[in-house]
Every structure is written in structure tokens, then in C-alpha cells.
Image (cartoon, rainbow, N blue to C red):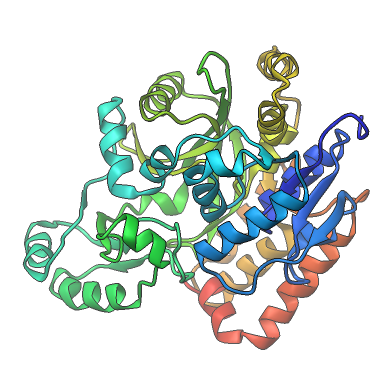
Length: 423
């Protein structure tokens, strides 16, 4: 198969989602090349990476476009599927040019930015019949003061998008309305975006304000899937994020399988069709009082994609087949994903080392009692878990990842404390 399938290039080094995608494609005989990343990136140690290619030192999106141009010209005919937000947005906004060098199946740049920008996402979601949390997008101090006077519960400050975002911080919870104006100014002063994104969206430097929903600490419902370019075929799965780090606003640490909510599925599909999006995705919802509120949409590889792959829905494989134009194989693969019994027996996803660090940190910081910690241990033992990184047949990514996590504890103790002790 490897001799008959075009190679695939990952321009984003990514983390656990990229690793799962590389394994998914490598196991199906696709030669995988990827941009070289730091040694601590687990995917770069996978046996399925046949070639690593040095990347640009600069972090600008213009530099990334130049890198793709140069690589594409020298390696004509390789497939490329979306990795991170930035790689996706650059490829989507320049898909006609890059399509001369790569095999692509990309939505347009405006469709991608609409789904990656919280304000625009909320507008198209509501138009499709979905519900979203209450949010404000002030443009001046008077607007912030108006939000402070009308907000009746804690709020969270967030960047409007992560495209071209140069910080790691996802958000800040503000519990006292009297502090909102100063917190807004402080948070906004730290926002840094790539100049090309600022040119595209002059308001991108302004934070958004969203009502804080503590339900997000307990669970987030994730509808995942793939929609073909003609919107005729699709496959879906669903998971629940049950533990994250830090616990208030953080990255998913443990997920469990969930049933697909058919109404959400249909409305998300309608939203995607309305904006002209196709491909793989993860839509995140907070369940509140029996309703599902859409909070985010990831139109590319995402961290827990390994659970979808293990449950018979190999999203990177679908994207690859559509990119190379093998629509017959794509239709067959989607039919297999939708067949009865296709989901198998795996019912959870998690990172064991980070899980143990999280429990230890929460116990030390008194964010969690012994009873809750034991309940989490029982949760882990009672699940058929797809590991985030471990794989006996491909061991080096886990070794690199463990070394990187332990080194971070030693060299960045304050950051580690903020991640695992915060509650």
C-alpha cells in the first residue's frame, strides 16, 4: 500500500492528536513526513514518521506560508491535512496557490476563520439553531463598564481566536464585577497576535467576555466527526471531557465515550454547510440545565482524536482520502464507520502520567479530597482506555513525552504548580 499511496506532510508538529493521526495513517501504509520539532514533541519519535523536515525559526504566519511554498515546490504531489489552527488557516487562505504543490481538500479561509473566531462562531451557531453562552465583545472601556454592570455572575476573559495567538493562556476568570475593567485591561495588554491576523481582523486584539459556567469543570460534551466536501456523507462520534488541567480552564486530560445527540449532530452539520466547511472537526458543548451550549469548534486534528480512531472513526484517514481524491475509498471508509458495531469496546482516553500528577497536585493543594481522588482512580481502572501516547509497538513517543513532563517539573516548578495545584 505504501508504494501506491502518495506521502503525507504534517506542517504542524502538534502533540497527542498529531501523534494519533500519524499512527492512524502510518498503520494504513501512508508514508508520513513532518516538520521537525523539539525533542520533547512525542510525534517526532514515532516509527511511522519516515522523514522530518527542518522548519522556519520565525513564528510569523507569513514565514509559515513561505515554508509551505518551498517544501511544496520541492516535494510535488504530497498530501496535506489540517494540523494546528495556524497551519489550517494559512493553507485555507492560500489553497489555490498551495494546491499547485500539494494534494488538498480545504475549505476556504473565511469559512475557517468564521469557525475559529468566537464572535463569528456564535453568530453562525445561533443561525443554525444552536445555543451559545452569553458573551460580550466590548471595543472600548465604556463597553467593558456596561458589561460589568449587567453581568450577574462570574465571567471569563478569553482571546477571540487562537489563530496567530502568541500566548499560552486560555482565559482568566473574573469573579468580582468591580475588577472587570482592570482585569480586562491587563488581559488585553498581554494579547499578542500575528500581524497578518491583525490585518485580517482589526478587533482581534480585544478580549471577549463570556459568562463563566462552572459546569465546564465537571464535563464538556464533544461532538466529533467528518463531513465530505459535497456535504453528502458524514460520520460522527461523541465524547465527554471529564477532567482537565488546570481544572478551572484547561486542556482535556480524560475523556469518555458518549452517545451522539442527533439534534446537535444535525444542527452542527447545517452550520458547517452554511459556512462552507468540510473536513474533520470537534465541536465543544457545555451541558447546562438540559441544554448544550456551543463554546468552541476545532476544524482540524484535536488532542483526543485517538479515541475517535479507536472507536472506528479514523478522521485523519478520511481527510487523507479526500485530499488525494480517492472518493470511492472515502465512501467505503465512511460506510464502515457508520456500520453497526463499528465503535468497538474502547470507551475512554487519557494520559496516565499527567493523570497521576494531577491527582497528586490536587491532593497537595487541597483542591481534591482523598475520597474524590479514589473515585478518579476507580474511574481509570474501570475503563478500557486508549492511551494518549503509550503504544508498545511504537514506544519512543511515550519515552520522550515522559522525559519532557518530568523535566518540566524540575525546570519550571511554578508553571507546574499552577497547572496541577490550581483548583
